[in-house]
Image (cartoon, rainbow, N blue to C red; front, side, top):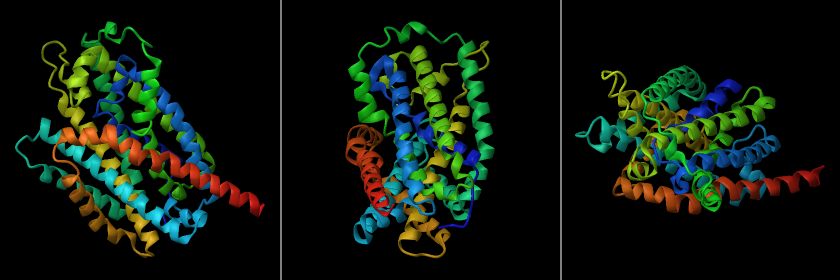
Length: 363
């Protein structure tokens, strides 16, 4: 484990950047139709309970990573297998996010550029940042978070004054509660909110552990509100049918902005903001895979793993699907229920139950 510390503010910023990233890119919770914003808010509320499960595990083993305390809870043999599976999970998630941002850049900025080149350029920056360690990642997040906030405020202001918003697209509201709940528990809970499981690998670096609960709740709440507002804007501007046909709804919304006949083609601002978010998400996943591997195999210098791990993420992102449509279908139908549900919910609850029983016996 790296000898480093981050503040609660830095954790707060990293959690927001991590959750927003590709969630702004994809049509989030659209199975719920006009009520997709409600599904996002419910998923955010449920994920707060998940966060406290992860926090409870940390409080039992405050100096250990997730990949370390699995051995303490279920034994060395099974614990090391589970730790290795979590490392693979983090690498796979990093590859998925990298692929999504590579496709986005090719679709709207560099159509003649090979996908490999676009992904390779991002992963090189990720490798360098991971090599420098969590403190550099956190300080970079503080700097770029301010830029993200300014860009978001500017774009939302332009959408509001451009006359594109049509509130009637949001009606009728609360049409089908069963569809909303189905969307929450089969899709939205896992992306982006359940993905905060990765921060169990970062909690031990926190210098003020007592403030972790408030920090996590605030980050999840703000992220949920921001994503719900973004979805409301998308629906009110584009309507549900157009969003369902769009690969990147928010980008389509921003491309519709025209103010005074001269202020238009603002998609470059959106792409800049998304690249910042995507960079941090891939970086956090890759970093956690690196320190998890170093801890599992007793490697004294984790930074040396940044290069092979980064190249592994790049390679997996290339072979993960034959095309973007297949990639999205896997992400919506297969990945949530068969991979994210066990790793984000079932296994942490199981580990917490065993940890509770073991520590109760000790007392």
